[in-house]
Picture 1 (cartoon, protein in one colour):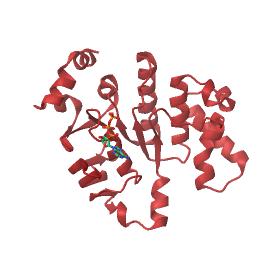
Picture 2 (picture 1 turned 45 degrees about the horizontal axis):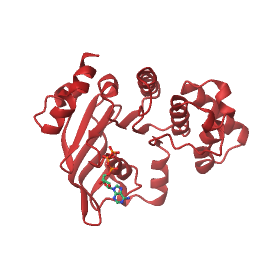
Picture 3 (picture 1 turned 90 degrees about the vertical axis):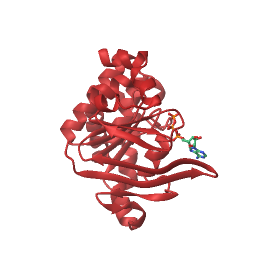
Length: 254
Ligand SMILES: Nc1ncnc2c1ncn2[C@@H]1O[C@H](COP(=O)(O)OP(=O)(O)OP(=O)(O)O)[C@@H](O)[C@H]1O
C-alpha cells in the first residue's frame, strides 16, 4: 500500500429531502489498499459508495479521483473513469435471464466494440480468475450457490480490467468457510492485479483478515480512519460496542 491518494472525498453532504445522511464527511483512499467502510445500519455506507461511483451527486462537497473533481469531468473523461472500476453490488445483482458467461460479457458489450468470440474468451478468463470452473459459464444464476454467485459477480466486475474494485457486503450470506475463501480470493486478486479495493462490510473476520485500513461512519461523517487494531481502540460508543462486543472479541481471537 502506498500513501498516494487515489480517491478523496471532501466535505461531502448527502441528503434526501430534509434527511441529512452525511455532513462534512472526509475520506481518503490510498492506491493499492484494501479499505473497509463500517458503520451502523443506515449510517450511509451505501450512499457514500454510490457517491464515489458517481451514481449519486453530492449535495455539497466533492469527490476527487487522482486529484480531479469528478463533478467537473467531461463526458469522455467520465466514461474513461467508469471503465476503471468494477463493482460487486449487494446480492451480486446478476441478470437472471443471462448465463454466467453472458453476465460477464455485459460490461464488454456496453463499453467496447469487439468480436463476440473474443468477448467469450475474456469472460472465460475472468471466470477462471474468480475461481469458478469452466462449466459454470453456461449456467444460469439461479443454478449457482451463494458463493458461486459472488464469484460470478466478481468475474463481471473484473471484465474491463479495472484498477479499483468496489465491494458492497461481499461476504454477506456466505458460511464462515465460504467467506474466508472469498477473502482469500480478494487478496489474491488485489495482489495479482494491483487493485485498490473499497469494501463495505459488517463482517469482522473479513475486516481483520484483509483490510489495510478501515473508516468508521457515525454521526454523519467519518469519525476515524486507520488500521483495524488502532481504530478498534478508539473511544467511541459505537466502535466499542462493535469491536469489543462478543462478536468483535471472537473475531480478534480468530
Ligand atoms: N434513494 C433514497 N431515498 C431516500 N432515502 C434514502 C435513499 N437511499 C438511502 N436513503 C437513506 O439514507 C440513509 C443511509 O442509507 P444507506 O443505504 O447508505 O445506509 P447503510 O449504512 O448502507 O445501511 P445498511 O448497513 O443497513 O445497508 C438511510 O436512512 C436511508 O433510508
